[in-house]
Amino acid sequence: MLLENKGIETDTFCIPPFGLNVGDIVVLNLFSGPHFYETAMFLSDIFCGRVSHENVVIHQDMTFVEHFSESAVKSFFNPVTVGKYLKKNAHSDCPYTTQVYETASINEKTKVNTLDRTLRKILSLYATLSKTKNIVFDLRGQGPQGAKEIYDTVKDVVKNGGSAILLDGFDDMKNDCTKYVEIQWRKSV
Image 1 (tube, rainbow, N blue to C red):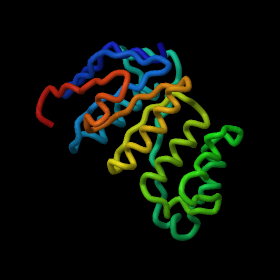
Image 2 (image 1 turned 90 degrees about the vertical axis):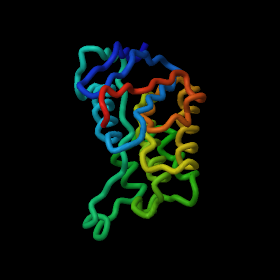
Image 3 (image 1 turned 60 degrees about the vertical axis):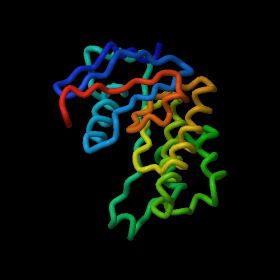
């Protein structure tokens, strides 16, 4: 077992117990709404070990797939290119590092801020996967097509010895995962 959640309770919600093993994709439905981002970041901090929680035992490190962000000033004067991003955020000897170049018409000199949200998320996903096969991710800001593309990529990684926790706002993947868990809200948020 990579991660064991014995149940997380706060004043506003409860996450039922679940375990994460190699080959598992756990979809944790937080339900969409104004609470989603804050709750997802709180849980990703726990599942990735940045914040300890007495009811969560982490046997192997998990990594959150961060969203790419760049200040408007930097984006204008010195925008990050795909090559620079991968050099800084990925292991160069891993196949995932170059796999992004097989997507659309991306090359090392492509400015990351010119990519659509899905391609930026895929870039971040590949950079993370170059370091670990055990991830926590979300599909925030993705449309149905982009969400499916990213989820299918993660499914392939999980089939090959990875594991993943998807912090989701919908139940679209309910029947396409190893375990499906829904947050239980204590009061209206």
